[in-house]
Image 1 (cartoon, helix red, strand yellow):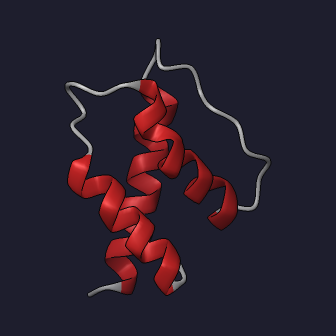
Image 2: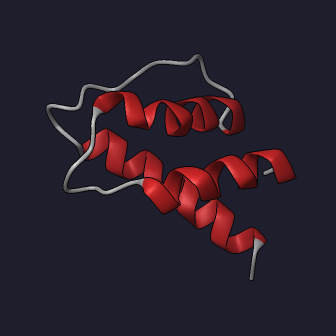
Image 3: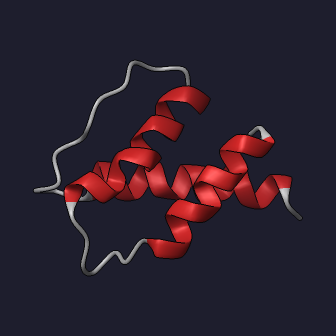
Length: 68
């Protein structure tokens, strides 16, 4: 994770409320996941949060590993 990606993650996670959010608020996280895990950008369906939660956990884990 580059410094710029870390800053983008920090900005996202500090404002993200998992209980009350709009789908467009997830865009920075989708962009980060695509960049870091080298896949084509796409937006998972918000109707079932399993994939979104998984992506957030993956990014959080990576961020935490690099900042401990």
